[in-house]
View (cartoon, rainbow, N blue to C red):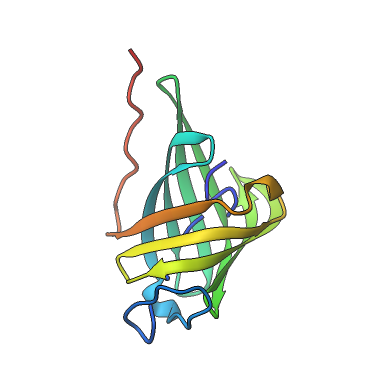
Length: 149
């Protein structure tokens, strides 16, 4: 499962930067697209978290296994308060599915975002996992899978 399946995705003290959990983060700095790679047990997973100004959240992910590619999409809502990101997933691959995941923001500078999963209604065994993503421009595409030899 991707960060996005744990519902991702991704962070600035007073509009610039933060390096400690619990710091106030301006939600406007979170808006846009964030790209990351890997997750526990699945190093060849690539994802883009999309954070909308209306509180909407979407993630698209590509899982690569033995040169095969599986595409995955989730949608829901997001909020951030006191350095804690909350993602409520409502739809997974076109099917209704409800779950909530929470992350502590460990570092955020508007370009790079690092967080730790602290609560997951779907994958409690993933709690404690850390994820890093980078801010990318709209239209950024997920990389393809690399064929195995």
